[in-house]
Image 1 (spheres, rainbow, N blue to C red):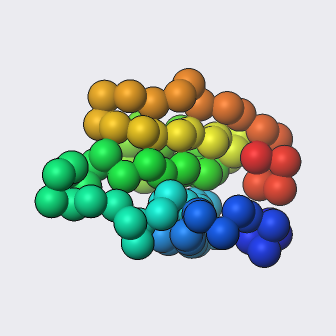
Image 2: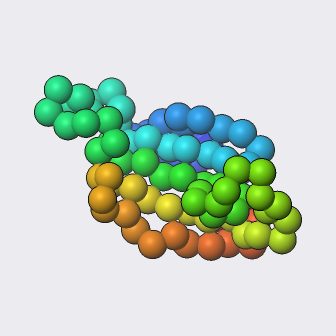
Length: 85
């Protein structure tokens, strides 16, 4: 995955073999006015984020989920591999 192609406003928050978390402008996020869960984030995960711990993820696609607020998210997009996601 080419993280160099990301817009500069996105920051890599966490990166593992099965997950990538991007945060939008954490440097200007007003944590005094908004709770941390309101920070816009994108999750790229191998398998659904809501899966149970220890569940077998073999054969599952890569899911991209955008969170804007605790109760507002965009439906997850699914791709066959990490680069496509």
